Structure formats: structure tokens, C-alpha cells
Length: 141
Image (cartoon, rainbow, N blue to C red; front, side):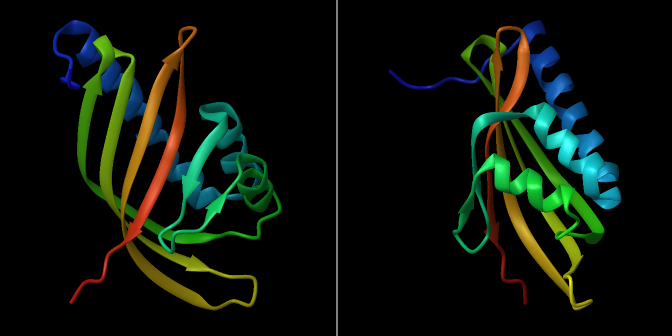
């Protein structure tokens, strides 16, 4: 048995719904603080797997708390090269993309990173939840 991408109306609807979550994310990310923390509270499963580009992981509670406290701040975020894959009759969606971010730490130091991201979304009890968010640092010439 192997996984096969779903097609048809349900798959198309799933793509549209999940891509709207992805599009809604960027303005909130740039706003940061409680607004972005609320986004994660709303869309992430309680046991979401979050993997940073350096391989470290963080719990949803810690991730949300960091944004709520404004310990994390992004100055710019460009997400592009989106690819969307739908499985399980339209109940599982995987979105991959490249993100270029400019961040400022609490000391005012600015850094830029380029990552390839993968988000896995699952529809449970009629509600879409992100269950995995993984980044891989890209070293560009």
C-alpha cells in the first residue's frame, strides 16, 4: 500500500482552505506578539511537532509563549515556491515552501535566514489543525 494524492472537489477545497491559513499567517507574523500567538493557538494541534532549521524542537506552549512575550520578532518575511499535496480523501494536506526571513533579537541584532518549510495539516472533527511544522536551513551561494 502506498499514499496517493487525492483529486477532485474535496481535494481542491482542502487546498484552498489550507492555503488561506498559510496566506493569513504572514501579516500576523510580521505584526508578531499576541496576534501571532493567537494564530498558533487557533491552528496548531496541542501536540504539534515544531522543528526549527537547526534541528531543535519546541512545544506549542513554549512557541506560543515566545511570540506572546515578543521574544521573537520578524521584520520581513517572504514565503514563495508553494507546493500543495492532498491525501486521505482531502483530510491531510502538506504544504512546502521557501521562506526568507529577517529577524531581530531582543538585543536589536538583525539576521536573515532562508529555510525550506513543510507544514502538515489534518482535518479532525471538521476542523483543520497543523500537526507538523518543520524548517530546514538552506545555504545559498
